[in-house]
Each structure stands twice: as structure tokens, then as C-alpha cells.
Image (cartoon, rainbow, N blue to C red):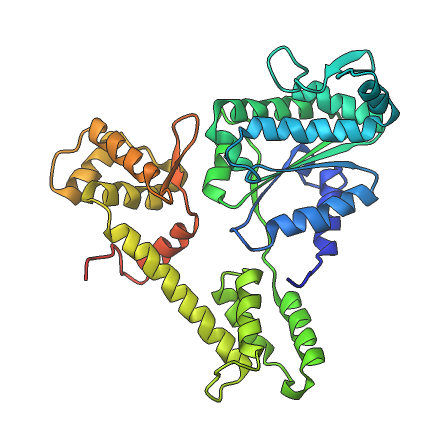
Length: 386
């Protein structure tokens, strides 16, 4: 995969996180939403993290999808523990040689094996200790942060991070920067949009997708590799990239296929071949989602329909929702029937519905929202059996 850097965006975020941007609340936390496979994690790890480190910040990165079998709270605690071990230096090495697992930092005794657990150091204590031993501000980047809400302990970890932010930061002093990213804006909203949410009042920001500068870079590379096919029709390549949902992996695969000496282009320019592949993938994805919807039972279809329509405002059991289900199924629907249908939607492989520890629901695949909105715009909703 070709590496494309976004230093200007990274530097802009660093300034905002450090409280140096006028009229920005980023020092209280940045919440970035971007669809899957659009380069979000690559940007966080290879652009933002290095930019923070160059500015003298200790960066702790954790991806809550790195091991979905483990509790998100444990993944966060482990990442902080590793950063403590790396920055405590000689103190940690001495403790390991003597068989000790406890560090004494600034008068606080920390058991490295029990950070974030009952009777262990809190996440706030551990982050404070990391700040003191490193003598630098700390930035915690939590990728796919919405996954924390899937467990009670994960949600408690988010509340603990909010507490750590409040303890370590003050007027004119930002010692803990929080970056929470998610591939599903609807789920990420659960961190900020209710009184009980850990970061109530913060705003979700859509991460800018790769754009014309990325396509210009790709076009330059194509011409350097294949000067015989220049100049490149950049506008058509950009349309194809948009059709791929701004996803570099799929775009690059199509580009490789179109430029292959074995490609059967039927006399077309390679840009048009890439566009054709993009259109075919989009049709395949839409057909897959349509087939999933049509295969559901009537009540499951009605619930998924309402969930797609209402998003974070979805309330599965209120009177209006029950009436909606009844109108779509032609029968009286009870809360028990709805609960059973929701569990059926969650138990499918892959799951169609996600549930938070607080009993909130969301569509598991955020791409279904875009599919639903497009079908509604075209007046082609709901899908019907052929």
C-alpha cells in the first residue's frame, strides 16, 4: 500500500490538542469519526502520533478492535502499563531484576499488574504517574473508542479517562490529551450526547477524507511508472475514488488491476477501467445489503428500518415504535417480541445490530446508513422480494 502523509492536518490537530487554537475545545478531547478503511488508523499512527512526539508529548495508542475477545478496559490499561514501563526506565528494570511488580512514583505505589482493576491504581493515577516519570504531557489515542461502550467495565474506563483529564489539566495547562476515534459516528455519539455519557457536551468531528491531493500524488506515481499512458485523467480517477467511498485499499487494488499487463480493458483507458470496477463493487455491496434485509422476518425488517431511520434517537419499545412495527407487520407487536427480534438481529453472523452496556442499539455496519439514505433519496425504500 502506498503511504500518503497528511502532515498539515496532523500539525493542526496537535496545536488544537495543546490548547493553542482559538475557539477550539480540543484540549478537552478530540472525537474523530470516519468510515472504515478510509485511512483513519493510518493517520492516527503514522501522522498524528509522530507529530505529537516531535512536540515533546508521550503518546499512548490503543486499538480496541485489536483483540475483540478481550475487554476494552483491559486493552486501555495494558497500553498505559506498557507506556509506564517504557518511560520509567531504570526504575522498571531494577524492579524486574528483583522480581518486584510494584513501582513507587512520586509517592504513589503502583502495581503494574493491576492498573485499572479493583484495588489497583486507577487509570487517572497511572496516567498521572506516566506524566511525572516522563516529565512530558501525555496523549492517549483510543482507536475504535465506541467499542468501550459494549461492556460495563469499558464504559467505566471511559469515565475514568474523563476524570484523569479533569485531574491533570487546568487553565493554561494541558498535561493529558485525549483522542477518541470511531468508524461509526452513530456509536461514537454515545460517548458525548447524553447527560450520563462520559464526555457529555463534547462534539464529534468528521475526519476529512483523502481528497484531490491524494489523487494527484497517485497520478504522479502512475506517470513515473508508466510514462507511456500519461497524461492521467485525474478528474475521472477522483470520481472513482469517491465511488469507492474514499477507501484507499479498494482503490489501489482496482488501480493495480487496471494497470496490469494482463488486464482485459476492451480498449478503454485505465481510468475508465478503475471507474467500472468501482461501480461494480458498489452494486455488489448494495446487493449484499439488500439480500440481508430481504432475508429477515417482517418484524426484524421493521426494527432494522426504524433503527436506520432514527439512529441515536432509536427507542425500541416506546409506543410510537410499537405502532410502527405493527403497521409494517400487520399484527400487534409487544415489547417481548421486539426484544426477541433484536436478539435475533444481534446473533446473526455477521451481526446486524450492536448493543451497548446501557442497552442502546445501533446498526452494526455503518455502511448500511449510507445505503439506506441513498435508497430513500431514490424512492426505492424498502427493498422488496423480486
